[in-house]
Length: 466
Ligand SMILES: Cc1cc2nc3c(=O)[nH]c(=O)nc-3n(C[C@H](O)[C@H](O)[C@H](O)COP(=O)(O)OP(=O)(O)OC[C@H]3O[C@@H](n4cnc5c(N)ncnc54)[C@H](O)[C@@H]3O)c2cc1C
Image (cartoon, rainbow, N blue to C red; front, side):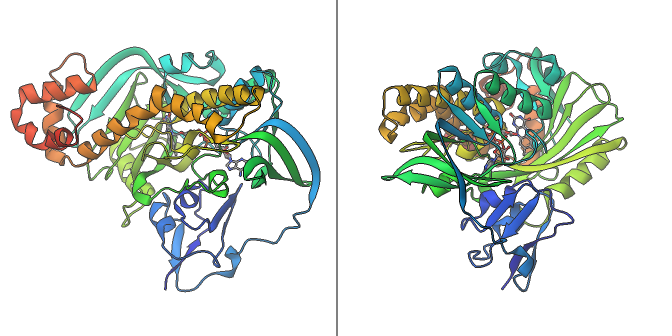
């Protein structure tokens, strides 16, 4: 029998292993990762998805993995209208929106510093972001004028969209979003971890929050779970937020300084050797630094994301100094089938609201936070926090964004089946086109090289393109 254990010298504490554990046997507390071997069934999903190869196997369960005992006496009882768990972009926007509607809001964050450590390549669409918050130069690193997609043989398709994108400074961005919620009246606690839900007559009515001075019973009419990819809150309510390893992309990234890059474009590199079932990226952060990262499917078991990244960096970057190592994982399965319960809404990465093609989730999580905050306030005002009332959040989410994920998943699966040769052929054809949307890319490819139809049949058979 093989047992997983964490090599603490290597672990990046990103939560990827927590997200794929079907038994809830792994707990991430700031920079402590515990495996409860009494619950673990040794499926080793955690070993597969670890981007750094820190989850390893041993022939025996190691004692140091046992959760430490804790005196869980409740020291204080408090009441709020809305309790938001997790202060990422999803949580902060939900807290701000509900507070703006006059709700008494508390947002709790288990980390000691909001926004740190960063788990992101920090790229967003400027147009989408402007709809949600006023831009602030404090958290903008670089403005982007387009994207360049490189096929395995180095052919490059350039998409020109001047001023369309931004690379953020997430550390500052996340903290400023939390500050925004405070300006609208929300209260924020850091180093405060939700450890269980409080229920009354089957309805979620708050959570137990573990703080330095003890456990607090925080009663709330509505709980919003914005606890990211390692989400546990939904699971406590009986909703499976667990991701299968092949439904996550496991990622590793370096922030590299002192390199020569084009600061105006985000670059994407495709190819089965470069990034199996994923892609590599270079997102500029100023003139001489960039987030250089890679995401691969969570079920690739022979090597870790960091091994692919090291090879990519050696080949494409060559020099510079690494200022930060960033690891994590993103769900790419599309929204969970259930994101609402009596007294509870799940938002952001916790609800798997990431774009299934790119894995991007900043804008989506903020959109979900906005809808959830509005629905929370509306439901509380009308005195109905049942699932029947909160389901408005789920409907609005799917109408605005979620329903497109079905198509994006189809595109993802289709493109993942392309051979490297097909990607090269496609790139050569698309290099001739002037302005490109996905549909235009498809038809340009077909018009110029009908034999590609054989490869693109995956997309057609899946109903994406008629
Ligand atoms: C390597 C990498 C690159 C990425 N690049 C991009 C990109 O370029 N563009 C993009 O749009 N997206 C990107 N993403 C995805 C993006 O980072 C997420 O989609 C986004 O952060 C989701 O926001 P969120 O608020 O849902 O979750 P998070 O930002 O993860 O926030 C969740 C918060 O909940 C807290 N929490 C968890 N459990 C508890 C608890 N029990 N009690 C209290 N607090 C708790 C966590 O500490 C965390 O702060 C990337 C992800 C990775 C891993």
